[in-house]
Image 1 (cartoon, rainbow, N blue to C red):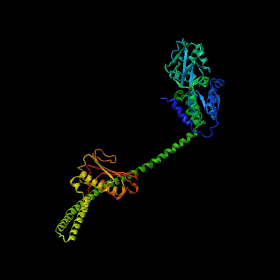
Image 2 (cartoon, helix red, strand yellow; image 1 turned 180 degrees about the vertical axis):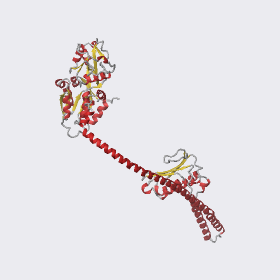
Image 3 (cartoon, rainbow, N blue to C red; image 1 turned 90 degrees about the vertical axis):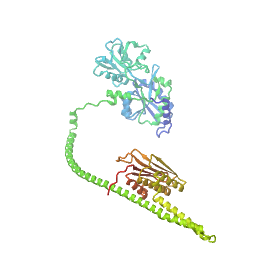
Image 4 (spheres, one colour; image 1 turned 30 degrees about the horizontal axis):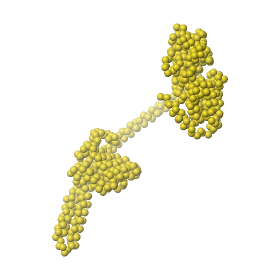
Length: 597
């Protein structure tokens, strides 16, 4: 879709309104115009346009310079042109050769009908029954403007090639008559030439002046287009381009483009140049396509060079190349021997590395087995110690409380100090029992055996909330993690216990979330496992976080990691200063069998 003209004007105005770089003030701007109708006609047509630009862009002097094709290239070669107005074919060549850039496209005025594109007409006389299609032109005479005339020959040349006609070999005569193009029409009408080509609009203009009758001409390869108002035989191409040279500052070129786009269609400068204003620069890709197909312009073929010419001119390079090839052959033999020797060494190293890896896997399996056994022994000792505290020390404390109560009840009123001591003994015994009960819970929570993991975690979290009311702690359960086994239960409980303790001591968190559930798919961090279901626990806080480089190997984290990996699980910690901490635990529901010692 073509960009909206008003939007382009606004954007160009914004660009041009920025301060110009130094050196643009008071600049003389040279505008080179292709003088295809002669210097005098060019000055007459385009001087009002140059004067309009000088009025719109104050502080600069604009100079019009009529040039032919050769002069245009020479001026750009010496960097003498700031702005260029030329036909689309010449523009594409100059763009490729000298880096000019289009800033606007001409809207031509053909007898009251404006158009941003144009084409060419291939015509013959109506009475020529032997010429009805382009292929019939083989062996005929043909008139055109010039070989490098874009609308006066090259457009038609492309269509002729598509029809299988080589105009330089298949015509009996290819006559380049130059300007004006009206003479080509007259030569065809008068029978001097069998056929010819002119740019679109020429025939209609001559007919409106009463000079010719359109009925006297047959249009070959006629293209029907309701939006294009003129007879044509070729594709349509963009009109003349107004471009800037490489030395023209972008800000100043933007001002020129704005002035051109804002020019009214009926401005005196437009009438003098016989055009209807300007539009945003169109795409000149169709011109590139024409040149590429015809292998002309910037795509012209280079001179054909034979293999013998190459050898004659570059024999010393070929000799050097032969020496290099011989050297390369011997070098390759040497390298191949070295590669074979090194390959044998690498094969041996790989075998040794595989043995080392196998030994490492065996040691890892044994290490996991030892960790698992160590944790099992540790939990067993804790369970035994908790039971001893409950059975032995608990009974003693209960007995002390009972005796103290009896003493308090039997003490006479005359001995108040005995009653006070008995009450003190009861209070101290109650405190000792609370401490012992807390120790038993930390050593081995009884609820874990009686009610399972979920209720034990809820109890632990409720107790933690009571101790830390300023921190919000949420527990989320998904799936049914109620039958995980004793090892998984105690591992998840201990990790939760350790994390909550660390958060209370160091994190200063406002919010803690604990997620526990069953996932059916293998987690991304776990590879090489065939387990279909996993236990997943994620503990996350928004606290101060920690520097993993200096604190990522603390004893607490190491202990948690050993517990998880001892059950063939995966443990990870993500934390950064000020960004909180996230601890993730994955345990397989059916862990692999541990290695035996």
